[in-house]
Length: 387
Ligand code: PMP
Ligand code: GLN
Image 1: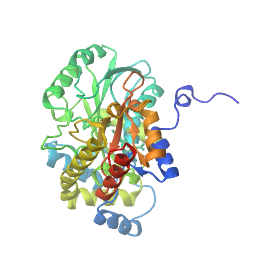
Image 2 (image 1 turned 90 degrees about the vertical axis):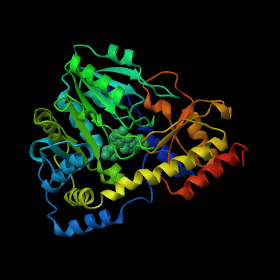
Image 3 (image 1 turned 180 degrees about the vertical axis):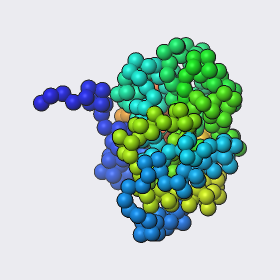
């Protein structure tokens, strides 16, 4: 048999799928893969149900249905003061994952350098490499996840095409503050580079911390592509409805990739997301308050079970150091161990690094019902003799 594509073949099955399968196999409480449970807004689900019979079920327009593109533009105006022309600056995709692939395939020329910040979401690197990009990795590390500015500056060169920035950041729970964003903006200008901004957790910044889209900074409007996800905004991750917003010169090549990858997205889901963005913004604004309480509940429980818990400014993930537990093994072995032996699933943070020695941190998702969080904690405390 002839060899398949070497880059994609070199990757195993994504860690989220691996851990969720293992959790199901062992009946474990799954705090691994990032998906909410029990938070889905009924009105939005009903709107999708209703739109399935009201609307045509044939291909919607390639750029997305006008209602949703308008709603995305209005949302960006309302929250960030962004003035987007929905006709030329907004496109709907089948999830943020597709949006990321569209951006990378549409913008990168083979040989272009791409700056990425670890820990990173696992779809970034394979697509950058498949697009012919040359990754330049900069590492943030626990416990503080500080941006190493000198290393970031060194990662840029005249060959840099773009930076991929995820804020609020999975799995670090970091929300990039104004001074880091100013520094990044300076580098983009100095090197005439773009930024692809993965902002899927935009409404999950806690403790009154603002989420600041890089595109809103001076000089960034023409350099940044902003990606959002209805899956995250409405806790409906299976829907896979995403959005890309950028100036026309950037959006046009990105749309070229979209037209050949998925072309379009289920019309009833698009209509329901448009309805949700316009009619029930209080849902996603309250979600942060609700999840912040769950974050604190999980953090307290994990500490009581013997973990050293890291801070979490945003997203729905907490990372914890397993060292104090005295486990003889790395983070991946630990996650397998607690799934099988304690009945609780987490995700190893090393899966978000290409290589290196960050191998004793694990990530827990707290967007789960409180009773489930409590049950996970009960199991962990019992397993580690801290009941
Ligand atoms: N980016 C980040 C940082 C994520 O954590 C996720 C995962 N849900 C995505 C993108 C993908 O979002 P979607 O489900 O809309 O494809
Ligand atoms: N983004 C989610 C996470 O970090 C998972 C998405 C996926 O399973 N691909 O857990």
